[in-house]
Length: 411
Image (cartoon, rainbow, N blue to C red; front, side, top):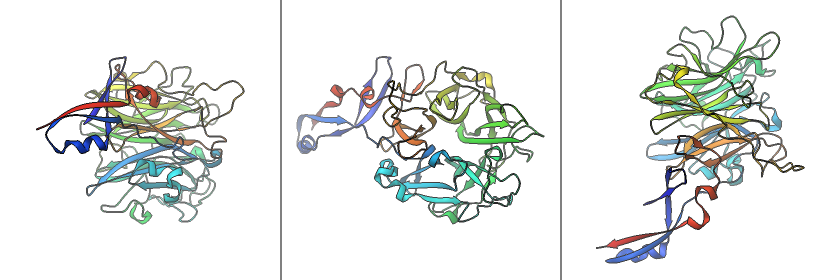
């Protein structure tokens, strides 16, 4: 039995309840009873993982067992270009993914360019980045989308990778494989257009990154950030693109790519990246991040009907204000742990009770080092369809309302 939560805007949600054992023990004989309980609000460490940016948690079910998989960009010392690996954590509970609960000790390297000289299926050696890994099941196989970078002068070198040579790739777990065993993952393969050419403008240096995958109405889609690199001046086309994909052939797009998010507002500052989709109440919302990779990072979103042609920009509606932004920090204070700054690049998952969760990073200088840190919190859908990404526990359930009572009749 779950408790129904009601909010002032008319929206509702449900939560599991931890019923008092002493009251439950009385239900072994006929009668009418009052059973008391507390609305369950799972608490996670304030920082889930230090120096882990662009975080992603995937709820993985296989052979009747549920496990949670965590991956992220290694942002130690803010040197994510120099990252040497693609980290992965596996646990039975979300809280056990946290550093404070032994999560860092559970971390294994699916890829590591220094110890294994990670080589792509095309024969290039990865030289850094391993940006924004996301875990999905694509074509029935556990998959990780990520963006490695390469040495522009020597594609056989495992050092000297440049961010301007980053490109979206995929690895997939063999059927029946163990995600904690690096040998069970396929070599990284670049994701290409339907004709086999790289993503981006023909004849120009391009980068593609932050690729995500989702399925609507049985159709698979990739969405990603793509830019071309001019010889001088700012980056070109800092947009989010979308294309259909056949999940049985995940290294090729199944249709023409099209831009769907164009930075237009002052807070977006010519950037739209890190998209992640979630369907709710007849619509799909694609949450994305903007501004600089700094304490000014913000989160916004676009939304479209589930039955629309999602490759058309005009079917998507953009929220007029950010969905998540930095908390006000008192003048003269620098405390990135207490006052979240630059939140963003989030992803959605489901907790042990079926509630939607949002995992994201915040600026982390001086918190657990000098890299961005992963955090997690529950989300709520407002009456107007917005996902509320910054609801506090007291806003979720007021302290005075956490105790509930249920009347039970036993016959």
